Length: 608
Image (cartoon, helix red, strand yellow):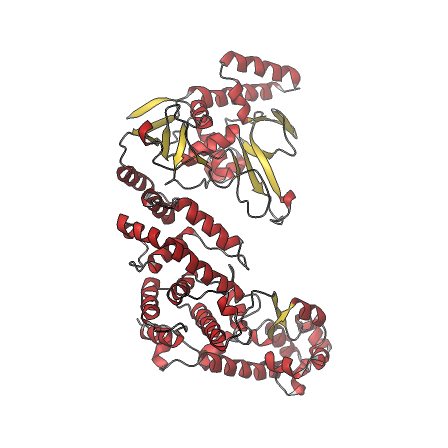
């Protein structure tokens, strides 16, 4: 049924008393500051803000479900700083008192009201380093009470805002009213002190006496504060539909139907909701969100995995159909995933760790789908990333094969287009493989049959020579030229062999290089053939020394490791084009020898 008796102030009180809670199927708050200020502007303008959907949970069922409280002090991320603010809601065990309602639809709006009236919003300032504590500003919501609400705000643009709301940092502004230039700003939460209309009128009179306001400013101060009080204390904005059915499947279906049509609710939120409703032993929300944080922040490199990746991986590693659709997460499949969850979690962790050992992280992992077959292989083989660090010949070979398969898959875009088919076929190959070695040949054969590019030939290698410094694929391709495999344990730099600052057309011409050649040399300074991987110490020692001088300080092993041509005439800057040609030939030969050519010319092309 619908109830028209709740004001925003009453709703905030219910949140404060924990009579309004969030079921585990809900996601975290995702609204930005601008969305919150727009919501407050909407209620002051009298716009409808939509209905809400509540689940009236019987007292007898309170212990059956996991519940979360609303966030009062929100921060966009806790990844870089220590803070008591939250990015995620905390679990709450209701005490049995009060009329408990779980919010199925309306969390973002109610959270915004709660933060704006009772809490804080901590955000990072633009152009400041994430790890700098001073970059983060804990702020409270203020309203410019001296602005004219009869006119559209210029900065509102297409949003058609009239009331000037802004989150102001606590470190700078802390009073009920603060001054910014000629304007006076009122802390929005303080309006909760003025439930009685007469009390507000007395307060408005005190403002007029305390501040030197123009007659026009006095008008706007009165109107803005009266509009704010009416919107929060009097108008019944919280109109909701109350579901009294206690069957979780029905409630979940209502939740999905209500949210699936929106653009902001991701598929992972819906699927996680289904898992949360059906898992018996584990708390799906805590497990998946906690594991995502661990993968992204606790491994050798910084990563960017998400809940979608975990849920997709769970289907593959549980030998379920791989299509990532809501229909795949029916009760029996979700139960199967929960049963396999410890193994799934372990296998993904091993795969992600090994990939980081290769130096691949959030910027260079061009397809997270490529991690899933590796996780499946770890599940089937029983090996761990740590055991693969052994110098034992078989382990070295396994690691070499995995690295070659992974990087070529990323470079060739194996998982772009028909990703589900690729995942299903790679899973079949790994599952049917006999032995603990990595079945790189079988995988390449299977991918070639799908019309995917595998291996390397001269044309593919030639394309790699067009890669430039800083590109995501450049680092991946460079690692293929070196014998070592654990690029994650040491920070490697993409370094210019011929210093780029000596390859400007102006400097080249000064050194006697013909203008046409000088322009060409400058254009090719960042090309793959002029790049190498050096440790930070090696790069610092090299700095910008002329190549013909610096190379004489290197031993024979360095020449071999970095594929430096033996002809010393090429070390002169005037022969930079000859150096690129000679080293390019060595690179192409190395790539083809390491990775092999595809079995047929046709296998280089995707089927149409």
